[in-house]
Length: 387
Image (tube, rainbow, N blue to C red; front, side, top):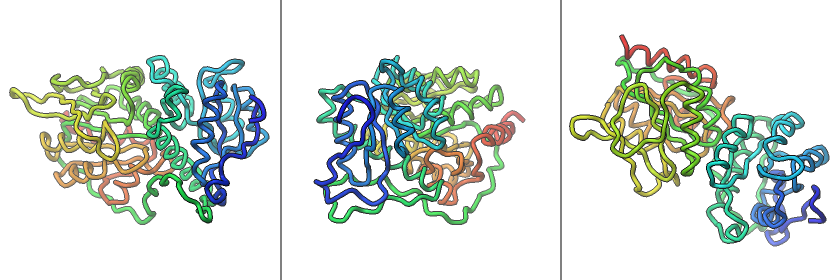
């Protein structure tokens, strides 16, 4: 970089046979020059990504945004002059459609600020290792590129812009995220006639914002136990549960191994544990498992749904919200095969239409709805449980 202010980055494209045509255009914003450099090198190792600019604070980032055609921003929170939380709404107002990934520390304060940023319009978040660990943090680099590509793909699909074309002779690039489901006519199923006894939600990228909206719309409407699996690390799921409680008025907390299942309570899968339910001593209890990740995730939606079907049969009502990948597809298939009901968020209101698109295009859903219509629809289905 020429200096701390935003500047064009030449990157390492030459070592990969040249940059792809129509690469995703990024800006990295962090007050640490070391981290900016490490993030830039990690991103530009893939020929489908080009870091157009970088900045050391929010004010410089806003200036750079006016000079460069940026699609995605990796935004640090704590910076001098103008912090990330202050800069975020200004950036979104300056460039509608901009996708912002918050880079946060894995602390309670970092998690709380990240939740506020997501509620303010950030598309996703990443927990970054320290500068010394970042050089060897391969998992972090893979996750960063996967999120950048998924958000870039969703943004361009919505605008009709061209996707990156593979660079001639490119080698060593990380695999792109799985393509979103192919578009075809969605077959909808009839909702189950039996009233539900449990409500389950699976979500990932963009999920916290969607969860707050859905749960906020359901205030007081559900007397069922509610289970949520959101792809998040530990500490972040603690804060997520607190924000769900504030948004909805329900008693919400991370699930605790062995605790009894009660109606009107929200159980959030803790980071790094699959959350399931089993029968013990004549009652249903929460079980937390350290079994291998499924769909590259722990917690994963599929184990939660499988366990609920095993105990509740066809009286499961499940919802799949915005997210990358296809976690929830096999579990959702189990729900409908048992006679339960599955609902998905629609593409237009999803940050990434991976998870909901997978179940929708598989013909498993009774409804595929815009985010603001989901709460009232779920409320109507669940109301039958009290009759």
